[in-house]
Amino acid sequence: MSGNISEKEHFLLDMIRKNPYVSQQEVAEALGLSRPSIANLISGLTKKGYIVGRAYILKESQPIICIGGANIDRKFYLKDKAQLGTSNPVKSNQSPGGVARNIAENLGRLGMESVLLTACGGDSDWKFIEDSSSLYMDLNSVAQISGMATGSYSAVLDSSGDLIIALADMDVYDSISTEVVQQQERLLSNAKCIVADLNCPKETLQFIAQFANAHDVPLAFIPVSSPKMNRLPDELSGVTWLITNRDESETFFNCKVESKEEWIQIVEKWLALGISNVVVTNGKEGAMFGNKEEGIFHQPAIETEQVVDVTGAGDAFSSAVIFSWLEGKPLQSIAKAGTVNASKTLQSSYTVRQDLSATQLIKDMEEL
Image 1: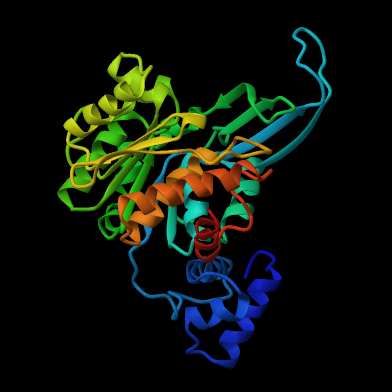
Image 2: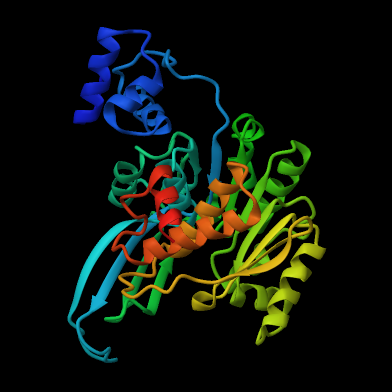
């Protein structure tokens, strides 16, 4: 046996000793965690050698596979107005980040079983991410790349929480190759949904789109920035969700969105490419949602009096949209869930808000 175990892991092992047939749900209720979190604890104990072989209380499931970035988010909060060419006093912190990882944690906190498929370095940054993430997602499919640094994102924010500049070291994600993804074909073919961000190389994203279409697995694409829009697959017909922002959509279609009518038109352009559900966000102006069955409508943003940190709000939005869709909600309810989760995340200093759960999200929506 190897590795220290946490208080929760000790409690789990004690329950198994007392009742070898205890269910994941019983353990989850006793610990106050979601069932997928218990599955991840069991997976960790199996890796450490405390549970031998395939854990008996695990059952075949349909996880959500999140493919893409998992990096260290380092945030620097300016105490005064930014001054170039000199030292600026700041407060700083770090937390696990990355679009795919953030979405996997949001979904895990919401009670969904999520698996992260990413590439990392064999360094202390990855150890930090692993320790912070393992309760909310399965990390057994992560590819560790020798000689590469784990991805990092460093943001400088002003006193209002608005971004001044960000520095991203994401070279390791070029290693999320088609071959790496193909090794997980069995996992992918059994997925409830695949969520892929555009940190992955284009050929990998093309393979994922073709695979999802061939195996009838729902697929959501989450762009990460305007410069990476050229990584979207050439064929988008059959994609279930595309959640993009105005700038990214303008880059893809080489046009400007300066009115509500043009905002609607750009959603129509995406839908015309064969995507089932489209969202185009526009910051404080809210989001435009659309599909062919329920039409196109505007979802206003929630006015947030105190923005603590903008990092992670977009991922919180995407996660709640995917979660609500998988729960079978109508598009209006899906839009509301995404907007509420984004607003609550803006008020948190964490990239993924710590009070998130399915129950809390419902309560937040009812309060709205």
